[in-house]
Image (cartoon, rainbow, N blue to C red; front, top):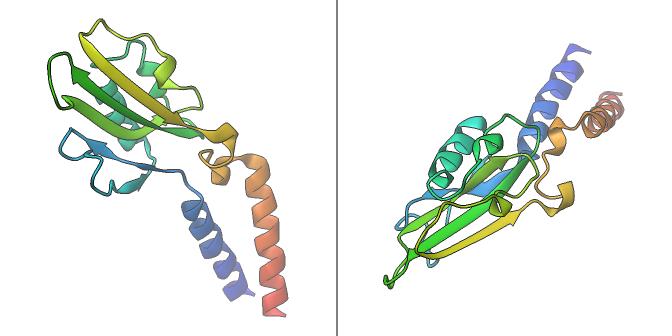
Length: 151
């Protein structure tokens, strides 16, 4: 009985971790070059903080994207200053919430700012492990599965 309960707890933690939102994460032009693989990270408040601090150089009102949330979005921003051949700013990472940081007003700049955002209507970027209904449904399925296995 206790082994079954321990199994359920471990499995629930593992599934919650596996379902967490992951985004490519890099800071700086060399790290974010298009011809290399950008590592994916699980979105956490620390990763959100790193990303949003970088974005604050170009976007106004980004503090709302730092707030702890049960949903995360992925963002990719590249800036090329006018007169330069190569990008002068690049960041990819997580922001909190489901709103697009790309729609925020920007500071005046002399160049080209490209911003892309991924949320996908709460399906792929939403963290289902933190949704109460999904978590409850998942827990019930795990408990039933554990009971079937242990009997």
